[in-house]
Length: 205
Image: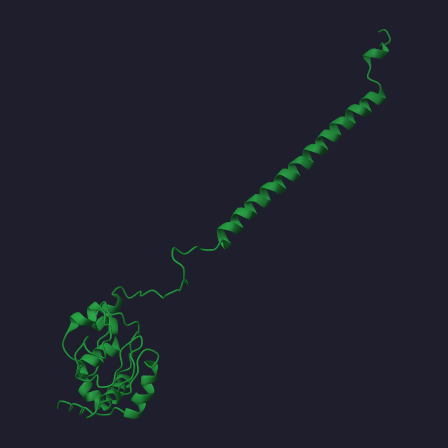
């Protein structure tokens, strides 16, 4: 075989240059891939953060107040009725304890004679008064006006136990007093708030 010609054999320098170019291209591809992967990771993190932490915009100005849902399935109408007749409960009621219980209502009602109406009406002389009428011109809800009748002991007992169950549609936001004895104490105290205190009913034998 004849000796190869110089131009037919790549020189060592040419081989080294070719290897360097291949290595540079490989390293460049790795760097480009790393940069692209980092950008994709940053974009995904940004989208996730916006989805998790973006503020909820309310349709109307104000505060978004979380309210515990009623899981009983029946809402206010499913509220349990008072377990004992009010006549029986009143036999052991305490006016002093009722005056203390009335403090729960003091943010919305006044109790003294001629006291002003607040969120709710003044409650002086409320026993046996008309439902949804009077009370110094208080603006009762349509549901309260439509209820009719008077605030007898039993009517008050049911209403204080669960206002929204007793009068669906009432504007009164108070949840009610579930404890029988506490309601009786409060009603006994309300009975004293009159020019002539209303006598408590006698328990049926």
